[in-house]
Length: 76
Image (cartoon, rainbow, N blue to C red; front, side):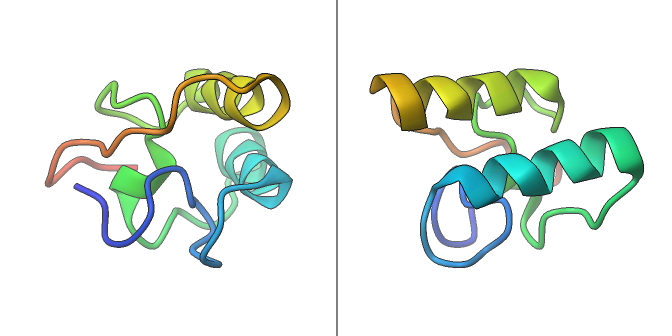
């Protein structure tokens, strides 16, 4: 479940390339988890992974579908 804005993994109030950077750091370098895991789960798959990065790339650069909220209680 999203706390604020679906896809806003870094919780800065907007969905943009900084959210991509935040998720890549989390997935590949053990960076900080999203403050609200649902916001990092942009494709609503139930987890935060590279598919969420791909989903956000499509949204930001190609007008893909809007991010969705992940389920409540998921881990990230």
